[in-house]
Length: 575
Image 1 (cartoon, rainbow, N blue to C red):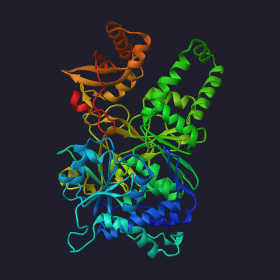
Image 2: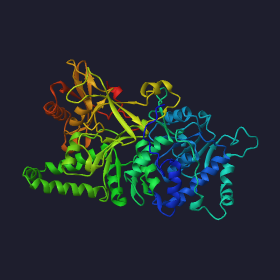
Image 3: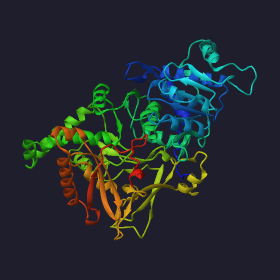
Image 4: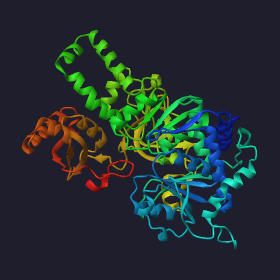
């Protein structure tokens, strides 16, 4: 396998587990994890102590380094502790998105060969323990007790204790091992080679489509050390964790990076509705906000658009010099809404709507757009907001990642050499677990990874611009490349559109639209009036796009589009 030429190999960043050993010891008395729902806070010392207890449990239960341990539940302090205990023990974490249905979650547990499961009490009754034969014990994330087991704990050893008896005697054993109490000097984690697998992160749960991304300690180290050196988080900074930590994006920058430097993480632990999120941000006042585009886009559509379209404001915006005062006011209100003390908002996980991005740049709102994928744990490119190039997704991480374009001459257009974006570097995965064919299809022997995204590089060779997904690109009858995501971004900002898809129907483009029911009810639209409004949208849209991108018709979808657990639309169902 290709080895990147310039990994981060300078002390003290050569060993990921050593970074956490140092952080937990040095920040022992600082707040580490707060449960937003209960308000309870654990210090770094509390967290390290619980991690040490779990390490003892793993030892007594016969868990070996390299064994797989599954983790299923919402973001809570106990979830984080189970994750970090598994990672720092040398076992492999299998984080499962809370949104996976029980059948898919159970398939992942079995496919990953997990030997232990940490699960929320509300989820476990939906699983069939008898159909997970490799699981030796199930531990509740709520009560930290063993709620199911196969005895004995160590099948290869006769007379081995049960998991429940191990837990019942754990306090006594722990006190015996640390008679003077667990202190900073007691925080100690093993030295493990960076190439070893640390996480198996599944991109799908469905049988036959499972792709378990194997991320190594070095893959995680590349992301974490970049976060440390970029000062994304720092000792005493505040973070509000509302993205699922089972996903690589939230995992890397709401948990792994924060805990490596001594940040205070508040775990929302509830569905992040816009109202709840803004309330929590005002309370936590995070130093950095990591989010997906949907959050900014909803706030733009629900708050900013009504504000700037009101007649007095729209008049003022048309007057030079006065518009700057209005934009400054809007910027100030948006900053306050997000807590008022953040350095920047990092948007990732999907493309940000161009109109929203353009407006936020105009008012000088401190945001930036990054680019990544689970297969890179996740980060590929990023730029601080003051150096962010509008329309881009940042620059490849210096000395960590590099990118090139696999140009398709038959489909290249414009002044830029366009094609599939390929990346290589320290963050690139080891491969897909038990799936060599899928691995070979995307990962070349020389280390280049096929991202499946179409785009081009800026003149500096590092700034990445994305047009759309290779699989969704439509080739017109005239040989023009059509990226439906770009058309959808324009249509999504039009009245009464909640979400939409652009599809090819026999050589003609059709937009499938699910209406915004709140707006429809607010304006009292009948079905025929809604149809007329969508037709107006279609005509207005066609004035904004190229002739070969024009929409022939709009079909109104009565229900929301079916989505993956990561909230991406299952586009293949609507082709």
